[in-house]
Length: 467
Image (cartoon, rainbow, N blue to C red; front, side, top):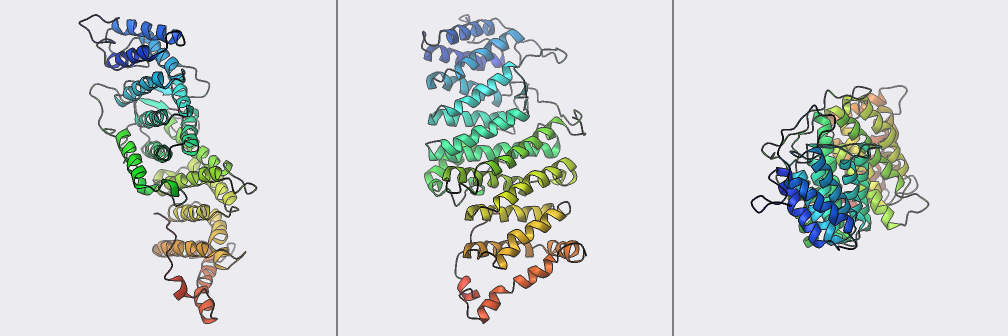
């Protein structure tokens, strides 16, 4: 143990974080039930107290996972934290989660996490953190989300494909199953923040990026009426603000993961971009799996699908130039996102239809040059069929489409491109012509005395499709 003159855990930066946390774990543990944990924590403290602060050796074949610690001390400390996280006892888990969050915040954890078939202590630590989200304890759920956001924004570690997918599913499970409405909304914001960080790195191909904190006003959905409470909104926004506090300020003397632009996989993309692509595909798959036309009344599954589509809309709206020039990312949009739109168009839920229209507008605005064939299918399916009154769409559907068309009309270049790419192509449908003809329906109905007159439509509030 530490001498009376030295701090608990030693004088290294990692030791100053680990020492008090392991001491709390020992005090909160049940000595009989958690005897192995107590022994591991004491052994780690002994190693930490005797550890010097060696300079990092980048040439070592087995580098330490904790900054400034020898490999043995780092491995013992991570083993004790893993046992604490796997104990399923909130009193023991809480200091362990707090310790992991601090290690990430101060950029003291190093290396790759969560790669497939990786049984390293770092990857097992991530798996143990994710398991804490299923403890059915409100405080543990928030602590887990806080660690996941910290892990996503920490540039000294890289969470690889499978690890990112598991993070995504953990946040989904908390959002769908938590008994706390505040925790549900916090999980939603945490998911959005992780995606913002990952795809900001994809755009610049670097781990060290600056991102904005997600605003709750961008993520509120009409279907989550139980969450539209001012106190819950303030709690959730305060949570994500706290989790992202100081995210742009590096700690003195801590290394940042090197730019991986030169570390390319097959096909010429870096690991950063390969991981982002895998995450995008997982998100599209979740939007297709969570409910089916055979079971449309399951509200839990419907909420999961709405969340998936909300996140996909956010990704499309924030996609930068790289998405439009990279064949793999453009191919993923065609193969996965367009398939998701096609499958979800069969559902009757109004919230789903509104999100499909919003995603379609984003694709039309940003990807029309690379998605000519796909957009030529979705424009008639989502827009023209509603205006032409096929299957008698509802009033809200028609108002949603009119709102969509109003946004399209504000971008003159989009209208020109629709005319040139479709109506001027002998092999393509005359979408612009049909669009103009179908937009006359309010005036035609008005002349026939129909209840669909413009005067009747005008006073009614429009469904809100956020930008």
